[in-house]
Length: 294
Image 1: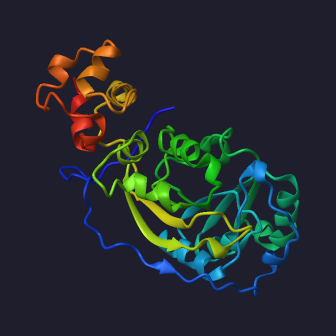
Image 2: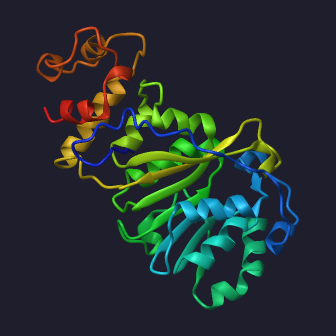
């Protein structure tokens, strides 16, 4: 697997200077039948069920869906977000790993499945390939409330895939979303991995009380737009980017020069335009892309 997401060419994504996103209200509505699916969350699957349809509408709205869109939902759970996606998109493909939830969703969305608006897969999203779901690169969007414990793995799985989504809208831990944006100017393997392929932004903060069971932390609606491989000249450039990033962050407190030397990378030419004392976290995404050209 590789790493990820940049801004459009000739722009530096380190400091987006966007106002901090609003915190969404956590009032709970119960007008949707799917909320009443009796299920207890399984810690082993990282389940926290969204209970507020208003937030589900906000998440779906962040994807700017039309009837020409195909959406992949990962972990539909009790279906509160699925309902909004089916209303707005042309077709929804949903992957559910939990046996009982999968059966419940089949019953709740039987009519939508029958008319071809929804296709349910009983599978592990980390072990299934987009091509197995009939998806085409750049021709689908991922919209999901994903389990906290596999956030990084899921983002990596789909951004580095040969069949990429055009956009990802994910409900993730607030801290993780902030780390991806690197608002403090300090990059990480995660933030660079996202920015190598797309442009991340936060569309709203969701309080812990909007879920059951309530997690210990708040969440954020993370959007990754403009997903592509346009920042890479070829596959070798892409692979070299991730090799360099991994080596650069091997020992965070050491300089990039030292970490490259420890990894036996030919750093003289690669680092010629950077300060000798620079650390990996202070190198911008566009600089990493340029380093990997050599």
